[in-house]
Length: 248
Ligand SMILES: *[C@@H]1O[C@H](CO)[C@@H](O)[C@H](O)[C@H]1NC(C)=O
Ligand SMILES: *[C@@H]1O[C@H](CO)[C@@H](O)[C@H](O)[C@H]1NC(C)=O
Image 1 (tube, helix red, strand yellow):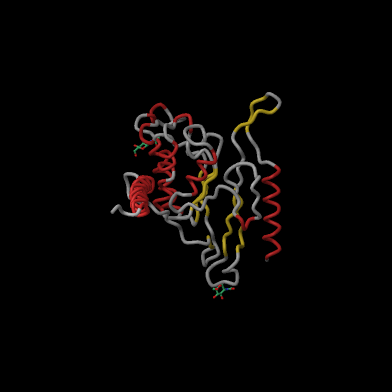
Image 2: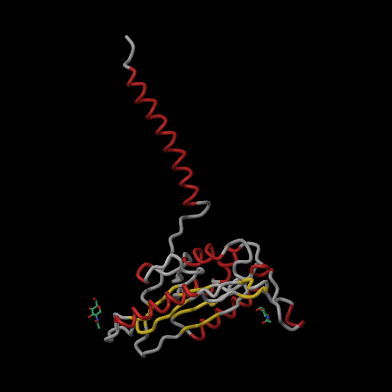
């Protein structure tokens, strides 16, 4: 007596399924875990909010030009200061600023990393934003014309930055911000700062911060120049600010 054929088919299908399952799960394992533990983004307390004394302090940091950390020497310092001066001095400076000023929010406004001296954009971003991440304060960044000159393009940079701990950066407008998929650049977003706790403005934004990507470089009529803010971005800015004004 031979076994019915369908029994073999089921066994065969089951073993294929088992092999596929194992391959699939080990690949997934590598993707998700790499060599390190799975990291879930840490978020700051939101929304951004004025303090009870009615203040909201922003620390703005531009042009850190961070590259490879301790091996990247300082530029534009006196010859006598050159020795022992590196990106780490920038890190210490930003940390000191955060400690002494105690801001509520940090805004990094471009040339955070310096592409031409950077060998790995992800490593540089981690290094550049160490003071902000360690402070656990909400922080946001946009790009300058040097950020994308190494291993990541502007879209990759903004998506990486938006996934870093305590970052409230966004790649482009969120859906509640009159989504415009055809907006120029990467790093156009709005953040509302709410009124002090317990006040009558506690549930609404009373200060609107707009971040706009001013581009990197451009060639106009054969002449090399810098980028600029485009019509699509202005339409978004004007539209959203009108919408926010009507709400109040
Ligand atoms: C850079 O940091 C080192 C170590 O703290 C310090 O000795 C040096 O003076 C700093 N350089 C500048 C130019 O501030
Ligand atoms: C804000 O929202 C909270 C929670 O919904 C509510 O308890 C509070 O009364 C609201 N405050 C104002 C000023 O609307």
